Length: 631
Image (cartoon, rainbow, N blue to C red; front, side, top):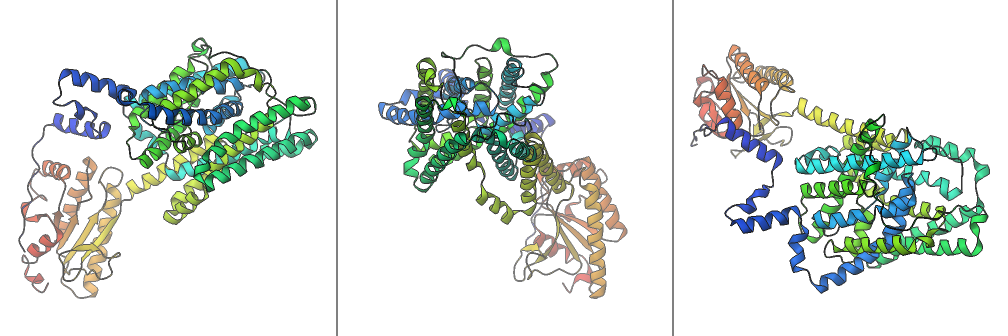
């Protein structure tokens, strides 16, 4: 067999290496490549288009596209209006704030966002987290003005955090919310949100302020004397109607407009029933009068000092991460369906800035909602103009139609919320997680039970902590395997995986399948020593020639640090005492360069013990010792 020479990596300065590492860390998509070799005018135009994606598609916009966007915009507006009112109540905010949040943020996103399908507005999970976290210290009933100030301040911090992630290109931080974590978290939050609606669905006046399933159910059954049969009848009827329309649209996607228009139809019909029969005088609570007019400014309500600063910063951080994760996931999902690209960093900046602007215009945390975006997609939207149409529709509602909502019953808003969040319980995805990875399933369950029995933020924290623990275990306990030869080939594979693979007497071939660093170097030292001892015992039992060579297959060792280099040096000393030669196969450039720098006395990086493949190493080394001639 021809043995190829292992060449040293080309020399690079420290500055060049740092530049490459920073580029791959923060600019993997290389956004500046579109400016190379272009005239100044073209660079200016492309820079403006990069910052404002609306400039990319606006020059080519046509009347045909407008017709599709108007239809989809009006369709999602019919869903956004009742959802906006409902989600604001879920966040313990005045219902009008939900409509304000469906007016300004979509306009900002239409200019800055890169998704064509994302429909922007309040979402259930962020509303629940915001309301529950702020209510722990401030009562929305006893001190509504302070609660509103803290909500706007939390929205500002959420937007600031989101935009900062995009500007600094640190979006990989949100990747710590694994899919299993999100599945469990969303399902638990959906149950908590649904249970919270029992207050409206049963007509209970005195209801617990806690979010756990036990105190909620305890509150429900301790106040049976407050149950209102009129409210229950109306709630059950509209809940069944909404669930039926949702089921119909899921079975027949072309009838998406049925479930999209059902919430608004429910609001209209229930409002008429209450008004005609004056049901508000017979135990059915209503929204009450809502102020007319567009969003009032709220920058003077933002609080950046005082005893509640830590609370609003923490609330903004958590709601910002959750809403950003949901928005980007939804945007990428529908982009994949239509085969176009969504820039994650642009999305972070767009969602962040719309929340910063929203906090100054009486809006609370908004993002791209899955239910609204699904309706937008099915309605045939072509561009972000559908968000503008939705926003204009909400503006007309704010200016002229607010008196019509005075008799809207709260029970119908509760039914709308239950119908919207029930889709967050994804049982097929949970079964898939169980099938693929049992530890991920455990993480999912911890997130689920943590949310429903402790609190939303504690459940999320437990799940993230478990995910990080799994990642830490993978880093500190890397996989090492013994490799054997598949007969009749030059291929070497894991002995446990390929049963036909055979050990080569006199050789121990180990594959290290991770970087070697301070977190795992001690483990690798102990594990490698054990491999050597077990191999020597096996060689002695089978009366083969003694172990002469330890071959490390290093294709998967992408990096080493100081501790990693020390591991290889100590391993060389250990093997030398046993008259075993240490051999390296295919060390990557960064690893090879660091080992060569540390090998000042040329102890273990000698050319005769460096090979490109395991087959070449064994073919060459088999000729070196008389005791191995029988191999």
